[in-house]
Image (cartoon, rainbow, N blue to C red; front, side, top):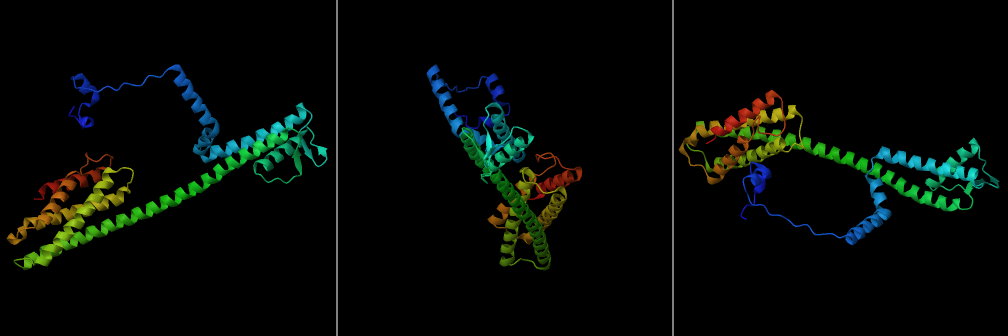
Length: 310
């Protein structure tokens, strides 16, 4: 239909339809009863084999531990209850485990040993309880494996977060250092311009390199403000904004001197244009996160300085 960016329409889809805008309709395939039954059967078959393992793997660690302990206690009660209801249960040596409180403790002990696959052999199941013990042993191994993987993954996540945090702090330190270097280079060029009528070609190339570095650090600060999932503390961010404003003022001072009539290169103009565009998007009301009033003042000052860059 010729409209490829409909999501950028200001009024949204409801306003688009209300004003008679064309809308493509998608016809959904028809499903009969047999198709639904086949799909349901496939879903149940998938759930019966691996679905419950996926559910356990997605549980939090504490819930998984309580489920594992509850399973062990439940199996222990079944072993003990089998001795009461059916007359056969567990056997310790050549003597059947009694159906009293000591027998309950022995049943729970056997359930723990079976779930952990230790197998001391001091207590053994009798009759059909052997099949139940095999089921408990297999389930215990799977659930205990999930527990171990949860512990390992939690430690890996902690190490990964620590690495990201250290890398992020190092990146902030490099941004501060580069902004200080940019301001020093701009001041040196401005001082040299006051001493000489015409700047050497080497100095102009150094100025182009400084502007490129300034553009990269400007992009980094811009990303910090707009990508809210990665944020430094406000004290560090305020320091970056203050250094950014100082560097922008240095660029303005250098432009106001007009380089003694020297013609700037296309690369220098492109770099200054990119810096101006990025800085113009930094303001207290533009960024998605709400900051302290002092932070907003720095942002508004940066936007005001950006408008002065020629």
